[in-house]
Length: 126
Image (cartoon, rainbow, N blue to C red; front, side):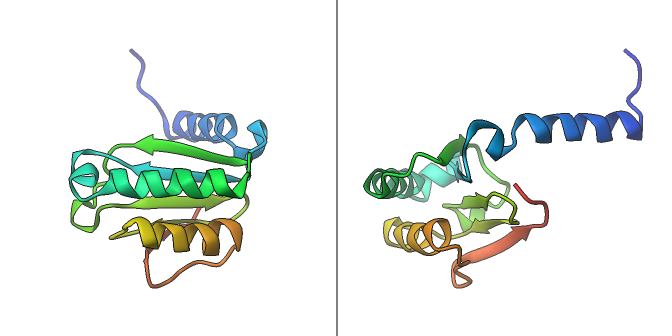
């Protein structure tokens, strides 16, 4: 197998980015719930249920929810990453159902980052 060059990796990154672009499928928000073993043990399943309820109550059909494994920050689980189209994504930490509801209302629907729960920003728009 041929070795990948830096140029190959850049092209691959752009291809994947374009294939996963929110606007491509009509979504404006992507929420990643990190449900690895550590996330589930910390209560991530309760956070996920609260999120599903909030989405259902909002009647929004432009929100994409993705389940993933651990984000590598086990001590801060449960973690959820919120990405709104054209904005940096934000990873929220130490969540429970109530915090998830506040984040949904404030960040997902209102566009305001809740700094009390935010752990990091991903400096690449979704």
